[in-house]
Length: 303
Ligand SMILES: CSC[C@H]1O[C@H](OP(=O)(O)O)[C@H](O)[C@@H]1O
Ligand SMILES: Nc1ncnc2[nH]cnc12
Image: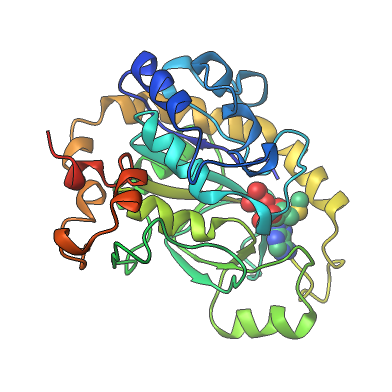
């Protein structure tokens, strides 16, 4: 529902120019294929959704991946454009704040879960920046940044938020919610929470060498719990609104911690492409190489 990605930028002025030059990934043709609303116009002051999150200005851009007014369904989000534009903006850390259903008794609505694994059951989304003309295989063994997870956990505890560290997020295609048989299947796979948006986002963030973490805000018990009603949008929105202060509190507490982290630059997430490109330089498609100037610029156009 409220889904933002935040990070820090190195040089807002320069990134603004670069963003205007290439408006998202793959030169989007329509307004809806552009990244989420808050980042559309490219002005740094508009990227920060201060009215929604009170994100301190220096913290960086916030992107509503469903667009303003929640008009874009999970399958239609241009995940590549969102990540590409964040990379162009100089963002280095992406934190996804996502509504999820709980698949576990102990993960109750209102709790925040810092997930550390995903099972990707989506099937109708483009999942890579790479492809014919330049093939890359990055590791997704550990899909989230543990360093960011540590900061989020510490910030949540400081802000007095009930938080669980670790958990597996099942990403379903949607937009319909799960059947009872599906919900039970995911529980039997030891999944902890379920949502519709974190894939391919986490994969693309990894390809773009961004640190990525998810704060999953539990809003419901999906449809498996005998003592709770089946999930509805109304119920989700109610829980989200009741927890908006916690989400704001977390972001506020987190921002100074991230800025003070002198280990960030050496984080392993920043070099995931190092041994991932398999197509030799002479066989690469120049057009694709050109489009990858932000995502893989560190390797393709070393300074
Ligand atoms: C509003 S119900 C379903 C919707 O909520 C979650 O979105 P997000 O991850 O952006 O918070 C879920 O994944 C669905 O897209
Ligand atoms: N039960 C659920 N299933 C899928 N996505 C969700 N987002 C919030 N609750 C959800």
